[in-house]
Length: 154
Image (cartoon, rainbow, N blue to C red; front, side, top):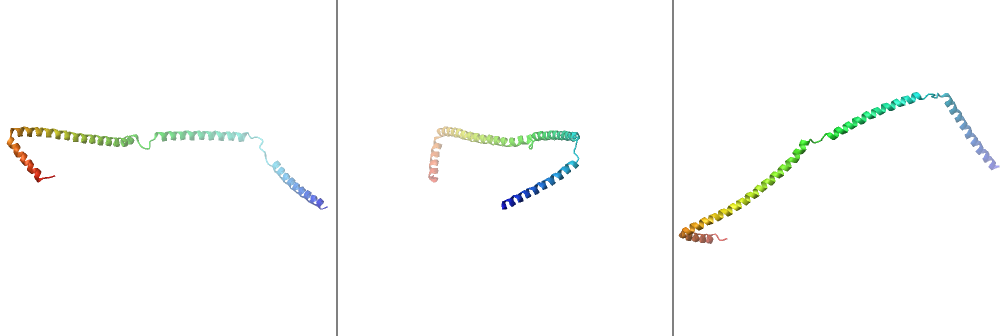
């Protein structure tokens, strides 16, 4: 009997749930029958097509404007070309000038050394010819250099 009671309770519960579902179904059918349905959707489609056209036009305008801005950004330089050339020219000129001056100083030192050697050779020739012509002066010179060596020992 207990099982029969349990089955009866389950059936009653199921019937109650079914009853509630039927009530909800009736209210929904009343709502659907009372609401207006749109018979002709051509107006909605027309408005949607107009909206799509205006959006397409706006998107095209924005794309063309964006492409123009991109082109202007590409052509615009943040640093002018003449400024870049000047910035690059200054170090190049400075390095070239320093190199040239270094070369000139080296050449000057070499020329000075060559001139010194030539002058030394010319003086020694002149001294030799003078000492050959005046042997007594040469003897005095030798005595003088010996005294110099004694007073200035290195």
